[in-house]
Amino acid sequence: MKISILTLFPHYFDNFLNESIIKRAIDKKLVNIEIINFRDFSKLNNHQVDDTPYGGGAGMVLMCEPIFDAIESIKIDDSLVIMLTPDGKTYNQSVAKKLSKKTHIILLCGHYEGFDERIRSIVDMEISIGDYILTGGEIPAMIVADSVIRLIDGVINKDSLNDESFEDNLLDYPVYTKPAQFRGMSVPDVLLSGDHKKIDEWRKTEQLKKTNLKRSDLLKDK
Image 1 (cartoon, rainbow, N blue to C red):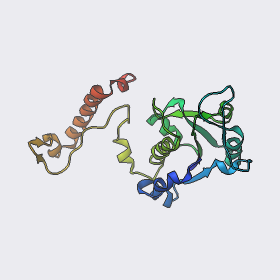
Image 2 (image 1 turned 180 degrees about the vertical axis):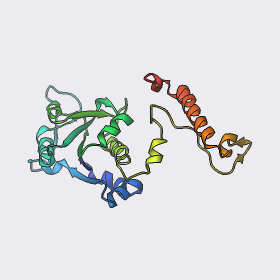
Image 3 (image 1 turned 60 degrees about the horizontal axis):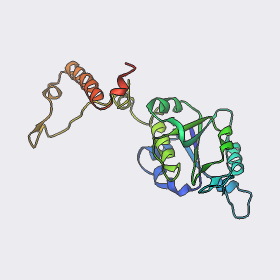
Image 4 (image 1 turned 135 degrees about the vertical axis):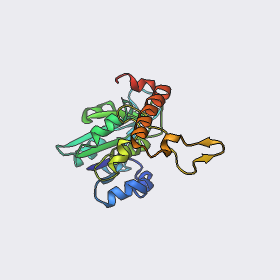
């Protein structure tokens, strides 16, 4: 898979690309990530990419031409262009799974007051990571990229993925490690029993209880 991230602040991603699971996935050539500064596509002498909005109003708006040119310079038939915006569909694990099957994802990071509305004509999907406002799309781009990369075959052990939250619309079951007793709190006896059938049943029950208590909305489709 290839992920292209269009941003005005490419150094934002330095640590993201050079730590932990993401770095290992890159080193193993399971994913190719390119960071593109779309300011490089400005035709103005000062490399300007934003301007004041028609009709007046606060802030600056990202211009069409540099973004169109940047996307068109890397887009192929299999590319999926994603705008990161509060207007988009709320991101979740189901969307991450679908994106992990794509060949090439282009993530467009906004900044300032927003995008010229015409830029929407060149994108295939709009994604929001939640109902709040950030200073730009760089953090949402990292969230989307991270959640997608870890689902690529070979990046993470499949058994670990199958046991995570939001699989089958359930939160993860409680987990414990040594010591078995700590400040009056005990590990449930069933986890110490060695009976894997009973452990699996307990975990399933705990998933349902936890999801019903904390995220009952996830159970609507079950």
